[in-house]
Length: 606
Image (cartoon, rainbow, N blue to C red; front, side, top):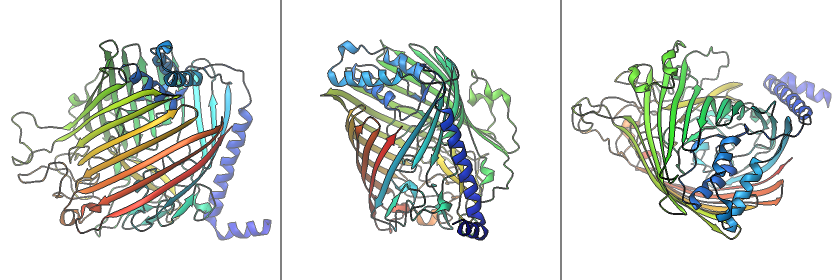
């Protein structure tokens, strides 16, 4: 066996490289295991709960159940903050199902922990879909990479003292991308050509080269006290009450490399956060003069340039806790030479008033929610990226007008105790302008120029074309970007800590504009109404967009998912999705496509 291994590494240097990294990862895991059994029991209120936390969901349903405005929608949250939320609920007034949700949240928040806790999560998942020709991209799956669980997840939590908390997750699984196409960019056999795949490493179609070395996806340190918290590291963020997404910070990105400060009380909360991404100059141009995607794979490229998200967010509660308001101002700040204007870091500044258009693209949003009666909450969001002041040229009417950039959302959520659990549901509508999130550095964007957009990239190691990197671009805010009309409805039932079932119905009209559409002046007659049927400007991801895109794409997706806890640490779960797209690619001559997608899994936690 030793001879066979020697022969292999001599013939495959890439495999040798990956094997070394795998051994290093296993060494770190062993170190974590050794650390996990030290320390004494304690309860630390600085633990950070993620944006998809069951504890936060339980508290949200309890707030709606008692006719209160939604709890803070600015996640993640510390245990101290969530405990303060739970204190607003009067358990004695709750029905049995709501009491179970309350007890679940209280038990989770009151758990003791050692100075260092080691956790081991094992998950076996299988994925199947029916259309292996047209559905070949990760973003075409309803349950995407961010929701798939790794085969093995090693978790280390540390509580060095009362005011400190650390978290690190080291996962062993398959990579998001393992191939490259000149027509599509990064590709993956795990979401495309193979009908049946799993999350098991080294099991075909997975190979050693497909191992995911982009970990950790969640790792950070936190410090805090009564009413405040600071978090620095890598974690997801989500700002807003939306179910289909949120306008300034959505929860669809795999992670943020971020710093976050928040302070909160009974009726007010303030958050200042930043997040850093590769500068667009590192991966633009996206396509070459022939329309082929440019494969930037070198790890040797010197990383220069600053691309930073910076935002402050204020939340208030009014009318005896029945109304909540959140005001957010944010900017995307870019500098090609790593220059940072320190003035923008002031927490009291108004970003729009810096007048640094070539470096910054500012945005502002307002959110309001209100619970008029028990069991029901109404909410809305509006975001403003660009608008014409009185006297300025009007888009679509006057010459040389700047395109509007608005987004609107309205919805309702319900929660009702039923039996041992909570029944819940929501109905949501959202609409975004075609040029929302898009902006040139000046007033015209040329082919190959990145612009100053609310589109960010994560840099990932990939085995595609050797041992290189790929850049995954996504909208920072609403995951479907501009030029979209979305209607989303869902309903579910959950007995927290035991079992759950949920159904979701999604319908979207999406116009011809996407994350690569050029931003420029709008001339009379240009199609600027959502959803558009014409693509009038250039496109950094499709040289033929102006000539070929002539229709609104229509997406219908129906989903049902659920899970059951067999034992306290043993869970089974699954999801069934149907997705149908008319006019795919915004081209009327393209035939409709559809896919059935199935996920089944079992997990065990130590």
